[in-house]
Image 1 (cartoon, rainbow, N blue to C red):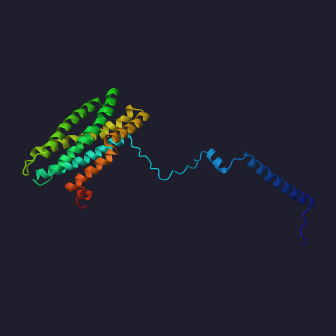
Image 2 (cartoon, one colour):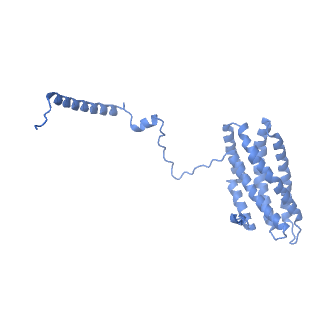
Image 3 (tube, rainbow, N blue to C red):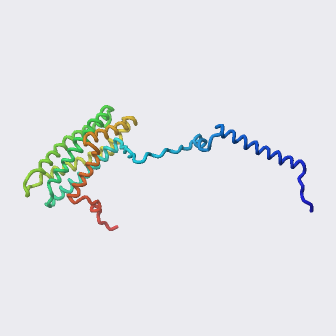
Length: 257
């Protein structure tokens, strides 16, 4: 069998294809160099792909952004840990066990400086008036204000009774004050966390809400000369250690499942 030989027409078609290929390559390179053809990265951006973000400057700390509600609710966390201290002291008084009254005085002092003079001031000057002007939650804010006033009186009594001298002093009056404070503030903060604070979004714009968080942070740093929340957490942790209730695992019950 003889070899297949291309006909003249086939040979001409091959040369025409070579010319077309060369012309395509020349035209394509001209378009790219002139900027008429966009690089693939640009095409990806036009299709909605996110551009690469520049790397953050090394060594620049990220600023922690805390919303108004988060700020208020984590301060309630500090209050709740103080209530645990009050709970333990009250239990020891009832069981006639020893405790250092100075711990109560220091805890009450933290309530005064961080909770009453700062946290409750934020609520009374920046939160309650917004609800009252909007005509919402007024019955609740009236009760909350009254409880703030009563709480301050109890705190003063606790601070005074903690300073009273006498090793065999009767602590029944202190126990009564502790019980009243705990009983009032547990529902007080729970109602704020679950009803009042969430409703704040209904009466202020997102912009105003963000501005409140920034205002709270500025006031905190101005009041305490730094991170007041961190300062309060460290102080309450020290008091828990002195009282022997810092270890979280000790609160885990031994339950047979």
